[in-house]
Length: 131
Image (cartoon, rainbow, N blue to C red; front, side, top):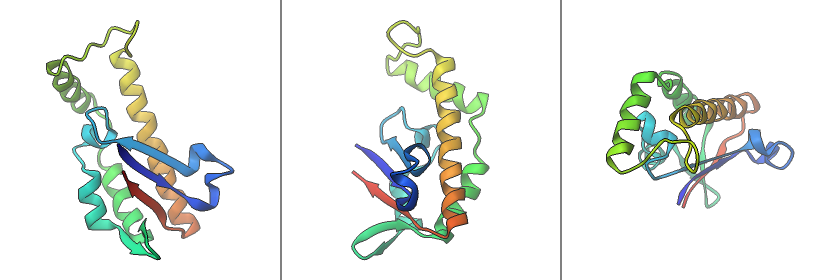
């Protein structure tokens, strides 16, 4: 279960730039940033031809929000402490280390920012699916 966002025009040629997926569980980038996929979908998305899309004005709004929410040490420490209470471990052998998790969050955030900027540049709404 998660959020799937893609940019139709480049999805097949550049999947790493044309597709983004984030889960709804505690390993979600949005959970770390204090955002909700469902809430943002209600606020920013529209139905067009039976499909949910993030229009250009919504992409601009989300871009501004995400730029204001970097993956900081404090934000990550809070997320890590909450996961530890849930029984997560960050050893590195069979599970990812905390440093790997943080690096992944930073990279995924940058991937989503790039995708939003591309959507705005191409003037192409993003397809948005919550499953």
